[in-house]
Length: 103
Image 1 (cartoon, helix red, strand yellow):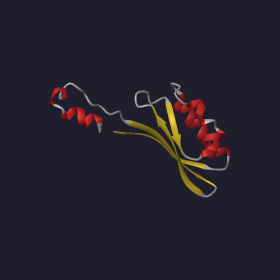
Image 2 (cartoon, helix red, strand yellow):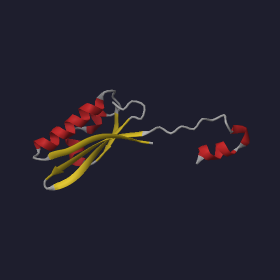
Image 3 (tube, one colour):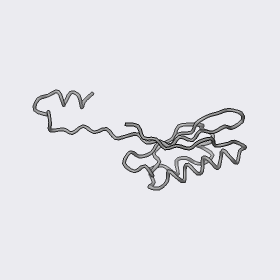
């Protein structure tokens, strides 16, 4: 909203470059205890090897100590591996792992 307001003011037109960062995520789809679900790892838009958050089962996030992976370069693949290992160790099946960028 602020960016639109500044852009509409003539003295600011052309002097502010508006750029939204792409949202990158690793989406882990899995089946556990007969239910299909997803665990999503949010990635830093400027360094997609860095995990910045997650959405999914709180039990899984707690079990793998999700906080330990946040804001550390290179942590995204380790976080992904920890989630997949947890799922498989608890009798589940990882059905797909995909990293996507949305702008």
